[in-house]
Length: 261
Image (cartoon, rainbow, N blue to C red; front, top):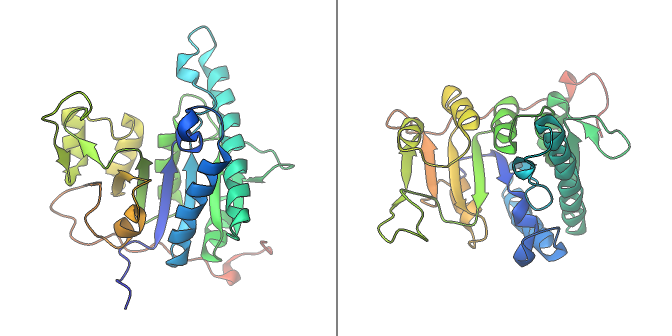
C-alpha cells in the first residue's frame, strides 16, 4: 500500500538555471526532459501541480546596471515565457497534460492567467505552468511563486534547488555549516538566511504557507516531501503546525460558467 500523501496540491518553484543543465546558460533539452520526468512522477501520485519558473538561464535583470529596472524586469518576464514553453514541450513529450498561463497577456502563445481557470485545469489533471512572474516589475519569481501558491490554495510551496536544504552558512565555504531539517519563518528572517526574497517569505509567513526547500535532482526527493517524509528543509510557523493546512477547495464544473479546455 502506497504511503498517504501529506500534500495534494503543490506549487513548484523552479529556477531558470534548472533548464540550463551543465552548460549553465540557455535551455538544454536534456535538462528540460529530466525536469518533465520529475513532474510526471508527482502527477502520477495524483497531486495537482502548478509550476513557476525563473529566467536566470536567459536573463539577469539585476545585473543590467545601466538599464532601466522596469525594462530589465519586463525582459526577464518574457524570458520566463520562453522557459515555460520549453517546459511545456518537454511535458507534452512525456504525455503529461499541460497548460501555460502568462501574467502578461499574449494570447497567440499562451492563456492569460485566470485564477479560477488555473484551479479548474489543475483539478482536471493538467500541470499549469505560470509564466511572466506577477506581471509587474520589481517583483521576483520567488514572490510570484508565493503569490500564486496562495491564490491557487496550494498545500505547500516546494522550492527546487541544487542543494539539499537550508544551511546555517554556505556549506561550500564553511565546513561547520549545518543543515536545518526544520526552521520557522521568523528564524529565517533573524538569521538572514537566503531561502527566498523578503517579500516572498513574508507572504508565506502571513498566510501560513509551508515551504519545503530540497534538492530537485536527488532521486525521489519531491515524492518524499509530498508524503511528509524528512527531506530537505521545511519552513513554517513552528510548533503550532503539526498537520498540513486543509486542502483548498476543488472547483466543480457547475461553478464554471464557460467550458474550459
